[in-house]
Image 1 (cartoon, rainbow, N blue to C red):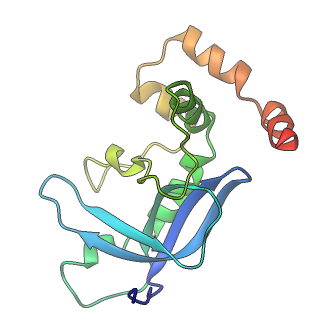
Image 2: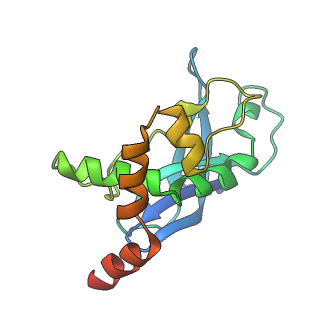
Length: 157
């Protein structure tokens, strides 16, 4: 018998329909190099990729407190809404890997998190700068990942 999922936070997922924020059980996984969390979604079977999330229910457990950063939910949702994120998904598809699938591991948005006091990149210009995109690369992304193309792709299924 499976353990009951206790809703302790929110998770940001990306589906074929776009970004969604859903209820989840958020637990902190201790890691010496970076704070990571594990997420279990409650009653969610649609194909998706987990982008990130945070604990929203306070706790007295000092080891779980690192998971309690509700601002990360908004930051992960902003990141998943960028053209840069959609480019990363398409690059994964080029490698013959379907990123939007419920059995996939988290996308790794938290890997940008090297310091708690440093803001995480959540906009295309910040991401371009972080990854040293050239003007030609930026122009390519801006031309190929506009909202009209996204709407046309989702209409095709």
